[in-house]
Image 1 (tube, rainbow, N blue to C red):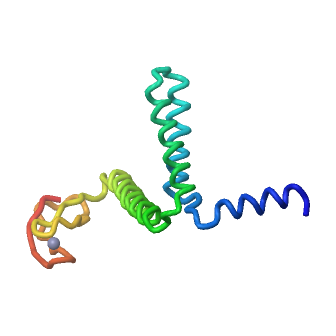
Image 2 (cartoon, rainbow, N blue to C red):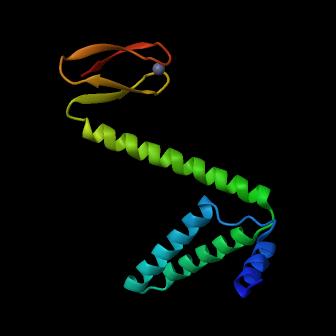
Length: 137
Ligand SMILES: [Zn+2]
């Protein structure tokens, strides 16, 4: 067995039962890197400290043996990221279509309804709760 094989198997033995790198770990590392780089331009030291704290947090998560808790944190992060990116995509789509369509919220359930612009007052029917209301298009 070569030296690299020995190192590889020793590392695998060390990491057995530990959390390793997950989405939140990557996000912590990237955010830490960005904060550290930003601090090298600004030079306050505060952002660099925050970046280092994120590195330490990512390392703690990688080496943690409490995989159940780390997985729950990772799931919460992934859920939040999905909601955030979906909201951003929908926002840009609404902005892109804002000349052609108008977006109004349902009076009862607050769901967003798209209506074509032009034509004055219109009666809308919510596809979710079925309530009817009028809105200016
Ligand atoms: Zn509704």
